Amino acid sequence: MENNNQNFQFKTNINCGGCLIKVTPFLNDAEGICHWEVDIDNRDKVLTVSADGISEQDVIAIVKKAGFTIEPINLS
Image (tube, rainbow, N blue to C red; front, top):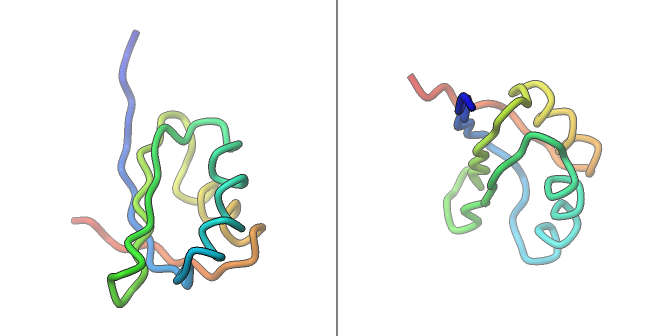
């Protein structure tokens, strides 16, 4: 089976434990997200997502649905 994992990074406003609790079910239930984490100590509150079969735009839509702002960080 082919491994198509991609890593995406986003600048967000997920900045505390309460925010993490709010966004967790949205990201955990999203098909295609293998692993995710938010660096709340980083000034930009960087969300890193390891995805297989889900696009960057899909991740953005999920986080916005949870009520947070999100914008992609260009990894290149």
